[in-house]
Image (cartoon, rainbow, N blue to C red):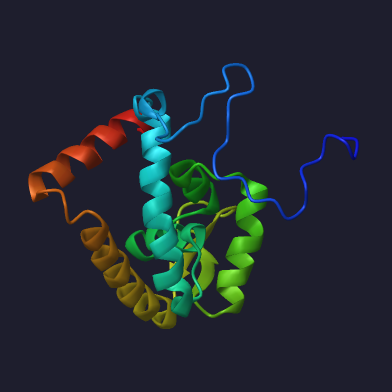
Length: 166
């Protein structure tokens, strides 16, 4: 952009105008976007994830850490392969995460009882205690963020969203 076409540095612009029609937008029309499933799902997810990050920070858990720990806590002995399949994770991404959780003393690896090549993942007592608190916090924040829904609407929404990805 040449100096002649750059806006003056201290001039405030009150409205953006369409260069073709010269009209200004007073109210943004997002009707089309609001008709898209992905747009709405992403906006809802962002709304919940922002609060999730804030409320679960004291536990040192990001969303993927929380998901992995939840699966391990509710499925003692789950393998890395099963975790990847259930959470749609790539194995290389899970390796470092498992090492991190193990180094924090939240999980431990034990030989798989039926497959000598596999290793089962188990939550330690420290990991179980952390997840009891973290899952309670997650439940409370979801109830808070979905307060405008009735319990039946909440159940219906979960069912419909799961039909998309399960």
